Length: 160
Ligand code: K2U
Ligand code: ZN
Image 1 (cartoon, rainbow, N blue to C red):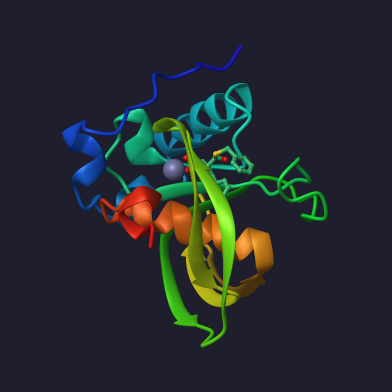
Image 2 (cartoon, rainbow, N blue to C red; image 1 turned 90 degrees about the horizontal axis):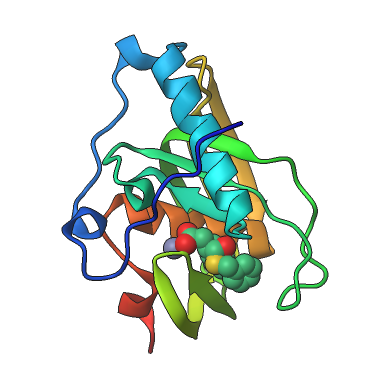
């Protein structure tokens, strides 16, 4: 039974910090694996399609991205949860798109946020393998939302 962790709410300092990179010695560790397992369980329990470590009071650069069709994005792709360690968005498309966002740390508020339609991202797996790939559409939106969390930014800070 994986741990369901408490989720930090807007106004709590942890959500405003720039999270620390995961260090080389942590890759492949039981600690990092357990963190990813607990984050994923917490995200699923809260019906999220993503979550960032600072949201569960761990100021480390780890995010989970798990797009799936939902009422707001019925044609969103179904994807296995991806754990991204030390993610870096390498490029943002000029083209942006508006879409409704919510946040596990901002209850009862949703808003339209402009995000790059396509992004190129580099991240590391729990084992420390480097991955470079592109995302577009809803998955790209989730990645941008989660990376914002690692930099102390909430979607409500981006509402026009
Ligand atoms: O980081 C979080 O708080 C998780 C968000 C991820 C998200 C970011 C951008 C757009 C949608 C979701 C939660 O999944 S909020 C719940 C949710 C799920 C699907 C669509 C909209 C909101
Ligand atoms: Zn959020």
